[in-house]
Image (cartoon, rainbow, N blue to C red; front, side, top):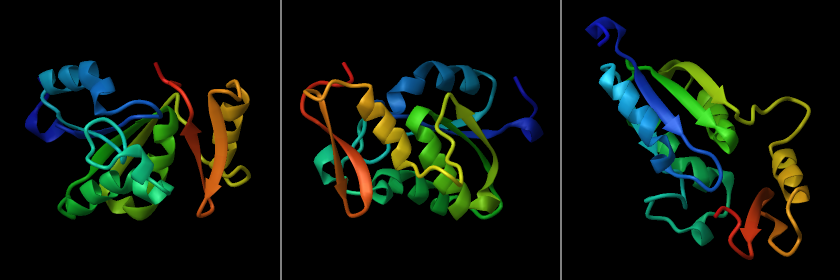
Amino acid sequence: MVENSEKKHFVLVHGFCHGAWCWYKLVSMLKLQGHKVTALDLGGCGLHPKQLHQISSISDYIQPLLDFLAALPDDQTVILVGHSYGGIPISLAMENFPGKISVAVFVSAYMPNCSDPPATLIQEVCLNFDDRHVSFKASNSVSYLEQNSVLCA
């Protein structure tokens, strides 16, 4: 168990085709060590009330994370942990709330850079899947995957 002064608040952000449920083992381990843990469902994922077809932009997708960080007291900081595509939401959260994030951890996660837009990752994913299963669409200048069959089973 960690000392009170060393307790941290971890915010866990899932990747594509996942939800907060994917962190269940890590949540248990961190809580056993005395840390506070929040695993969020991003828009259209897990138990989040918005359905996937209601998510039309990256802003819609990451809104639960931004709402959570906005609600934190100004003197509280968190450790953001993003997996896979969760790297994009935590990067955007870092830009929007720099004073509320003590550190960000990218676990096999996409880390945006200055030369490649986030859509580059989605394009590369699409190239690796058979065209019968995934099509690439652009809407409101935001790229997203439209599933034509089960992609994440």
